[in-house]
Length: 407
Ligand code: DNO
Image (cartoon, rainbow, N blue to C red; front, side, top):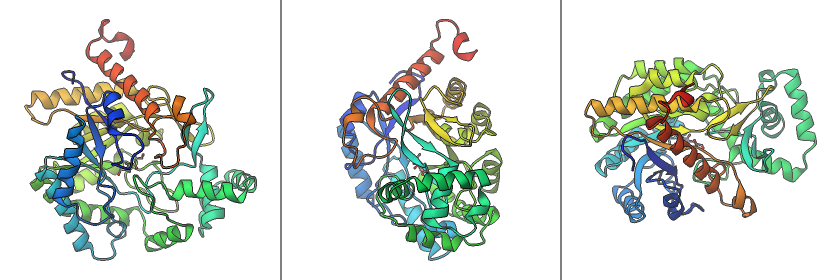
């Protein structure tokens, strides 16, 4: 690995991932972000299973730089059920990970659904395919598939009309595929959820506002941060994706004020952030280079990708160095933070990043992608990794003093 660069990682979904570890090595990554996806949400991760996964990775010359994710059970977000047991299980998992030397744990606190897109197959002018979120299409899901009471009030008349037109134009099979693309893309596992399951998951949130959800989040942090500290593990919350409320639910990890509230409430060194430029960047109010500087010491992992916003509030995933994210400025700020850690003598000074998502392109367009994880085919991410690697080299060793990249 080049001196002073960030650690190049690739997401890997475990032995069932159609992208094999050998490809990840060939892409040039030295590490993975991965999880024991086979363990149900809320259950503790046995130490032996963690060790076996580490051995498997080591056999391919790869390190496990970040766990993505140890999922937070829905009961911890709604504040119902056997919370003690769930918190104990989470703490045990952290202890086991720390004991095996896996020291960064990514998680999220998004209610009901993880990341959401309305089109997993949006064709770009060059023929590659990307992920896209269109609020009018999400309105169609809410109004006609989920039929959520009160949903209509969350959309403008124009969005509702667009939603109806979109829904009416689809066949039953299209509607089914569209709906499953929203509700059944939990990372690394097919939960097989139905629209009825989503309604049941929404019910316990009735009447919960941002303050209520934040209270539950803080209870979680207060319980698990001390366990993380004991284990030598740093927790990295993944921002909401998209970074605004959906499904009539609060979202509380979308902007700087949200992060301030969490870090002030539980001021533990274990309470940190996974800096996801794609998620945060979809909100035009977020100034990303400034946020890296503001939360520098709290950033324990990074996801690098960019989005392009469209006029009607939709956004799609652009190439890693295109779109609305000022990637050179973000990477510059991350490298600066790495330098600070190194100067401070921290043994774990190196920051790990992964290229987040990638386009389906080239040979991947010809493949049967059943079983592939949307956003996580190999070639598009390899392009992203290569571009980001080049950017980092350019920032570190700029022949012209960095003027071009910094201008
Ligand atoms: C989507 C991912 C998210 C992320 C989790 C972290 O591609 O970035 O699913 O892994 O939200 O807990």
